[in-house]
Image (cartoon, rainbow, N blue to C red; front, side, top):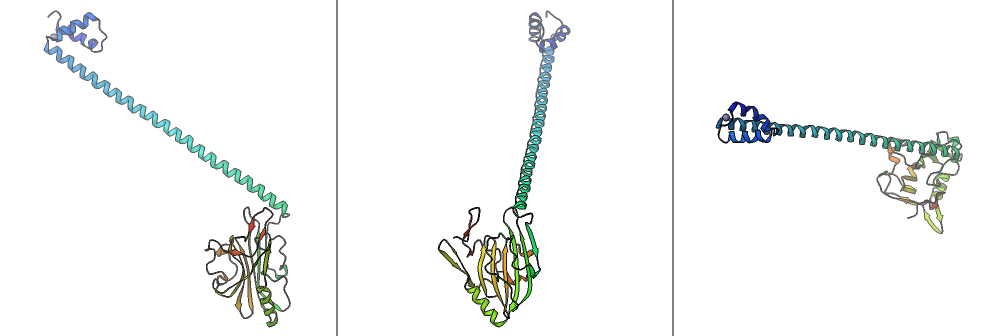
Length: 278
Ligand SMILES: [Zn+2]
């Protein structure tokens, strides 16, 4: 052998890292081709190097994944902030529109966009009423021959549809009662030559009823013959069952359960919307 084992083993790390000179490399190659012991040491070094590099690659991979996760997390945070900002923006826009709408209502109605009364002396004062009805069902005025048991008037202009609940319960003297029934029977509305008449309904209510609006656009208008020459007059527009101020038995049996109904009121509103036209 040209070189001692010790010399070759000193060179082996350099040889493995391929940083020794060409002459040294040739000396190592020549030696390990004949020396079994040095060859084994060389093989051992190679294996540990390859294990090290594998470990290094794994570490690289893990740290890259960590970075990716961080980026992903950051993107998620940015996306969340974006969504929250978007929702806030929409809320602010709606608030501004609402405030503007309220201001418009206030200007139109002289600031009076909600009105409640249970004072019978206010009866017939429907000036601010802008519901989907002409309130034909209600007696134009009260007479001394009537006895009023309950009166309640509620009307509010809201952002979308006005809400209203009007209730009058009264009894008549014999003669007046017949006259009132005749008046109810004759109620009709005309729009562009088309005439719609009041309906006498003995099925939909627990009492016989004269109906001008039934489940049309969440409106109801009817006179209920509740016995003893007593009549209950009702107008409802977008009113929940729990907010009803009169006995529930005076509601239609399927209150707010029908998709569409009918209305005798065939007219256009200022915005061009038609109601009661089918
Ligand atoms: Zn050797």
